[in-house]
Image 1 (tube, rainbow, N blue to C red):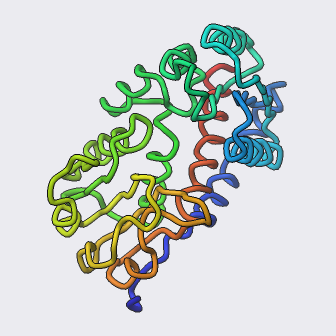
Image 2 (image 1 turned 90 degrees about the vertical axis):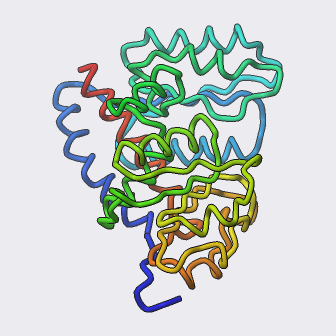
Image 3 (image 1 turned 45 degrees about the vertical axis):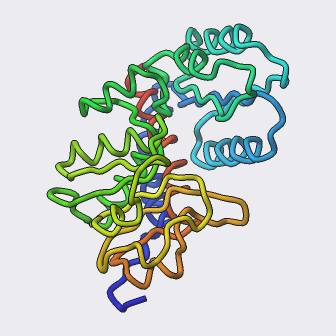
Length: 280
């Protein structure tokens, strides 16, 4: 690691984001409104349960009301959608989060689409995706929004830079590509079928790793001085990049943990407060 390498501290960014929300939450409380996030967990996946618990605790610490709805593994798509529709019409609920993934027999896309756009605080609907692509989404997908929030916090310019995004999921790779494009970066979106992936990454000024494979991005794939944003989280607190090797070349890099993850949760809380203000 060179002396100039900046470790992009997600905990620091998230703390400042949450501090900025406290006054807004107090203002809403003065109007008798408590921002409320409803989280739906289907089945007993332990990792998903942990994520839901973390989000609930984050809400509690900030004074945001958290509703946790747990549904059994055998829940049908129709029953899940019915639960979502109840939350859509509940005026006390401002944000709805369906924890991904759901059991395989459920039509996850249909369930996501059932979430009302004004409560889609995780940016999972196709309408939210389209609004994000056009640059005016109220609630862009939380992890892509977190990545840009980190870059903005550390004043890392995107304009004119070549960004390589590894991954094309509808809630991470695709939306972050569009958000970078809207900020005047030149964007290459790579995936499992991309030929010469290593060479593509070597051309990048900005690398966003969202591939879901531990230590997938190797240090010698990184151009000297590139910015590396690791959106991966794998078993054992390991990201999608080989952190120790990549930070030797990077000008700035996010660690895992304490990088993109905490800012993603802070973004979810911010979107919930935004939604409460819009519905007030």
